[in-house]
Amino acid sequence: MKKIIFHLLILLAFSNCDNASTSNTSKEENTKITPVVEEQTSPPLMEKDIQQITGLYEGYLTNEITRNGSLKTEVDDIQLTIDKIVGDTFSGHYETSEGKRPFEGTLEKSNKKYYGSFYELGDSRDLGSAFLEFDIAANELVIKWEANDESFPIIERNYELEKTAGLHNPNDVSTIYGYYVGYFYSVEYKSNEKPSHSNKITLSIDSLIDGQAFGHSVVAGNARPFSGRYQQEIGKITFEVNEPGDDRYDGRFEFTADNDGQQIEGHWYANDSRLAVTSRMYKLDRKAFRYNPDVMLTENILHDGLYDSYNQKTDQEEGLTDDVLKVNASNQLLTKSDVGNLYQADLEVIRNTIYARHGYSFKNRRMRYVFDNYVDWYMPLKTNILADLTDIEKQNIDLLKRYENHAEKYYDYFGR
Image 1 (cartoon, rainbow, N blue to C red):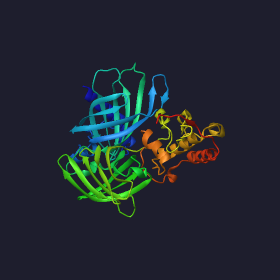
Image 2 (cartoon, rainbow, N blue to C red):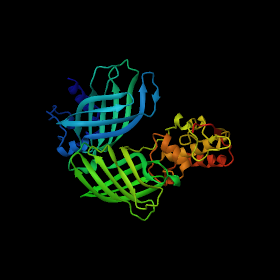
Image 3 (cartoon, rainbow, N blue to C red):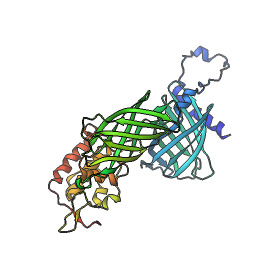
Image 4 (spheres, helix red, strand yellow):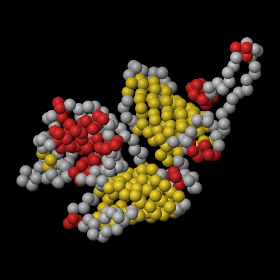
């Protein structure tokens, strides 16, 4: 019964979108006896449609409407998987900060998009139903969720998602395209040369064609392309790819990707045996990037001193204060009163958080160690983000730089 009700609801919800009248009915025709109208049906979902829609979608909450009329815009990530489609019915699950929910629903197709509805399975008070709308390539998904219980404090939630992985088709290796993020750990190194033992790295698989793999990596302020061979095996795909070799830090990646495109694991070997680190290991998780001007730093950034700032005489290190948690230089125009009394390192980190939100890869260790080690949402994507900066950010950067040059430094005792 639920399925029939939701099928009727979705037809009503989208009737104004794709079913505009294609005929100009005259007044004379309107006066005629009402003709028998044949029921219009949408095209059936084909195998290509099913392959296109099934898979993992990742995104975020855009807004939330409560019973008291307030509109919230808090960030909450969502992962939604459409597991199975049979005819026009589908099943799957989604996961947010509130937990994991299974659902069932129906889908239809028009010339311009896919659309449908689902209802959550279970008996808890906070269950709901949702309308879905995909673009025709099924790369983008918009969800409008509504609570079933009229006494539940939330009326409506809206989400925007992008497809990040398809369910595995042995002949479709494109399901593992995308970004993989994690730590690049040193394995073989020269300890007397102050090696950097762990850096956050983003490895992107860009294209796989007839055994040839193409992609790029971004780590420690360095973006490098790679190319080589891949081979499909049972349950996995193995890669051997090389960086061009015209940079002293180039090397060779060997790694394995699981078939569902959620994780890669492997090693990197330097071409130059004289480097401080000649081999590294990594286990990277798939992650979609989204610029979010509202994302902030968290308290764990305050726990250690800044790189290379230890003073043996005082047994202190330069550190950060909780002011870095309060100032956002991406979503509001700062004034002199906002920054005039801040310490030098706080100003420096607030400014560089602007760059981090855009995925900037830091070359200098002082800032790289801050964002690599203490900022979970940070992922290195680019070595130049100047064209991505907003007008507010550009003005705030100029202001922060002026005060950085003359601000006092804050020192404290940190465990060593």
